[in-house]
Length: 119
Image (cartoon, rainbow, N blue to C red):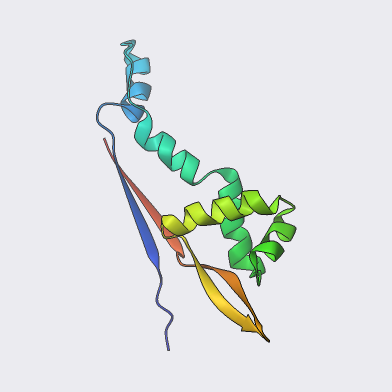
């Protein structure tokens, strides 16, 4: 059976802000612009969170603790990043039983990310 590709699409509407700043610098017109949309995306997909996603995909950790060990990062920081990525639909925590214990296994929900920027 063919595997279904899971895509997450993000739309950013640039209302005369971030990308227009670049073009305004070329023409010499200087104003203050709104960087909020792109800044939020940068915070969501920071380098560390990108490492988290990459590690989940290729290392397939069995728990958050194991993920933190792979990343050589503090458990609390990794846990906070996972909660944020889960909230935005990039990661899902799957319950797994090992004997009498139940642990949460991070799994990647998104295989492809499409970012649309309307200027």
